[in-house]
Image (cartoon, rainbow, N blue to C red; front, side):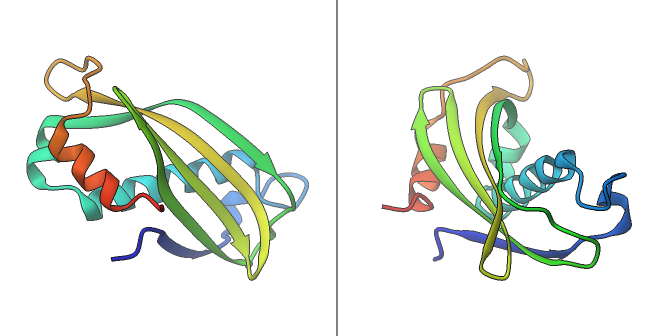
Length: 133
């Protein structure tokens, strides 16, 4: 079981801005995309039926630009878990070059009430399985 989830993509025209490189918003979209893909993979139908994660904060560091046609590797892993919140880390690389890193704070909501809820023990157990040591 890998504790880091990977997703590869090739930069498309829709992600390019007027400076001819990937728009900053695209990096956030990719960070959210990989988080959702990872959660879908590790969670159960019951969890998805009863809970939803929402972003409460992004911290983004940009190091270098991605360009049209670049092959990117996006990696994510679970960080700190605290009451209502989970931290998730994302890196976006072109080959071995780090282009962007994202730290996102997610809050768990009860899907029926849409109110914040403490992360249940069974969800914590799953998340802890995917946390690097």
